[in-house]
Length: 214
Length: 236
Image (cartoon, rainbow over all chains, first blue to last red; front, top):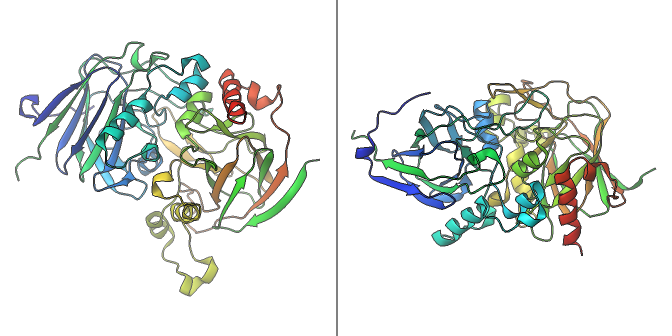
């Protein structure tokens, strides 16, 4: 657990992302980006891209293999498949973030819960809405395995994947420094069928600070 | 006895691709023990639909693959089912090697000096093979590593299990769609062997019957029963 020294009053950008809605924004090299779990136990599904080449994007497998650990926390470098360092996590008061659970989708909800659940609002619908409105040529091909900030998904010694109650609480945050210009796409998860949001999706906050003066 | 349509040897460090039709099964055999076969999967008719690691893991609550489990696409359908397996653990999380990793670990080895024994890496291999099908870096997502095992402890730390696969071990994946399979036999990226030593993998394509109502993969979880239903609806 590493706390940040940054003052929210000095942030150059601050916005509340309502429950179940997407957010998309660019973070310039050297800027610091914070996501705050305002009400606790809210999964924040997040993708990162090199802002100058969207095919150069966050890779869960390369990131976890690079640090030989499946959880993200302070010190983690988020890597692309080509080896670009997108961001480094510099503060984290939650302590553990998921890399394997991915995002909910209309189709995966049909498999996981019931075929009749196709209509329920889902993260990959939010991701698609965000990238289509961004209108920079991104399509479903650009959606890859995302991070779930504030979500707790352990792996057992027998190779089982389990979804445990969240370890996040109101006000917990994760903060990262952009190592290159990045595009960030968030789906503030609307899932109602499992405990990833404590069955009650809530808003989160995103903040950006400029790089400290040299 | 299964009807073998054809066989092919994938040399150490080499690539292979094939549209594995619905109604056929791919058997991969680790001839020498300690092989690794990295693979990615696409719906050949619409490659925007592709193997999805998180959907596969969370639908079945697994971080390993073996007999009875299936490989999900991002569209709620089953690309392939694992119908036989003498290994017991195949890795879905460790990913693939790349040029920088191979150069750092094994040194430089160029074609001019080493001919067809020059060092290969899995990422470049995937990208080259994908490009033959009109696909590119945007289409390369998480891969499976057949014959390899990565353990995760309570702190999240990952470790490569040595001697996971023995000589003659095999796994059979039955295609539930017309599935573009792209694979290579590069070493696992966490393989601690300091030497470049990829192993060959023998492939056999077999004719196979569709999943029956009491198919073990279908019955292994209620999620998989729904996955088979959605896959069968696609072909109606």
